[in-house]
Image (cartoon, rainbow, N blue to C red; front, side, top):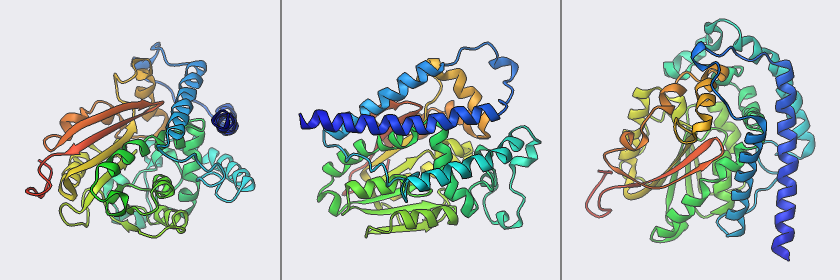
Length: 360
């Protein structure tokens, strides 16, 4: 009986959350003019709202099954990125989201150069990073962008971003269970940690786990520090994923959450080489990112349209990438699952923990 009540409460909370973000997505679409689809996409079928709503609810049901099975704790509705300071904060973020919408629309339909960062301060960052990803103001390089980002993404996915991200907690639990000494002796590196949304859920579920978050954006790391302030054994570092400032075999688990679709192919390969170097032999790589072509064929046309509508300059190369080939040699795929617009893949680092110093 208790489990039934808890499930009802969870589903009611998720329905309210989805309604909140989906309603804003629908309202935003009334003010927005869709980016024109290229001729090769016209006429190709895309999932309608009914299909998307059904698939999103399947994600919610999977989320509940994981919670009911004890894989991870139920989310704190008033503690995640969009409601950090209670319902009034959610309202303020909604107002901010719509206030910025006009600027986003102007970039979506303006010159291509409008989506590039021209601030001289941005020159110290790699060229591929100097983009206003998603047409958002200031790209990833301002405090306003860092405060707005999580809310924008939740609106984009109708409240599905947080439950998609939580699916990485299932392979993380498996990895920690197989680690000698458990979470208390393991070390996790989250590459491209952004505002710390994933690491917050990691620490809620594994408070004794030593975690390191790495990101190129100082403003986003500032939000992450605030979000993770309640926990110890947390280190946040400003650095590039393709040049990790760590010694070999430093980590037992590496996670990359929605990073690879924002990297050009050459940088992707450099990041894989760095992961291969810093992950200990026998360690676990947890990969979460967008669906790719062929994962869910009814979504293929929508995936092809996505980089046009939301300024993702490296996305088309990502959805065509063969991940198993990208991570070879050195990594063996162990577990795969789909989660709405996302895929979750777990890889095992090859080599003997005693005799090797890198994945091979």
